[in-house]
Image 1 (cartoon, rainbow, N blue to C red):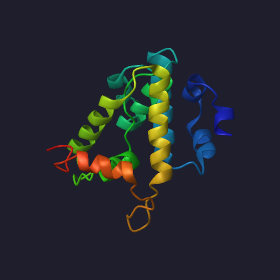
Image 2 (image 1 turned 60 degrees about the vertical axis):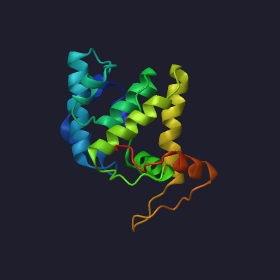
Image 3 (image 1 turned 120 degrees about the vertical axis):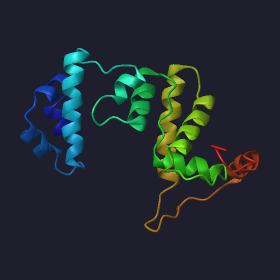
Length: 171
């Protein structure tokens, strides 16, 4: 229903907030819908309805952070920007036996930089890489209620852990 009512950025930008929130029911936090509308207005007015293909411009939009900017830039534009969310952080630190705190911005930057080093060069491959990272990590490493992981390590994980001698991305 949401996509049928707001098929373009311009439609969303012009939309009524009350109607938007009604259509958003069941899709998550209402602040996301409000930020989506605010961002749509900026994109419609300042960028002629096309999302900017620049990291700094994207994260300046309401509701868009590092992860969303990475997803948009890599998938929509084929740019080599990692999309790093909590799942990717958890798996990368487990695969490399890293003990850094994944909530620390320094760790997030370090993981993002490590992934940027191994990203493919071709736009089509960049899209596949980030989508695979997001999807595989989401499926493989389901987090249980007590914070444990449902997935386990395999031989590749053990090799990656052995290669990371200091058990840290940031030190």
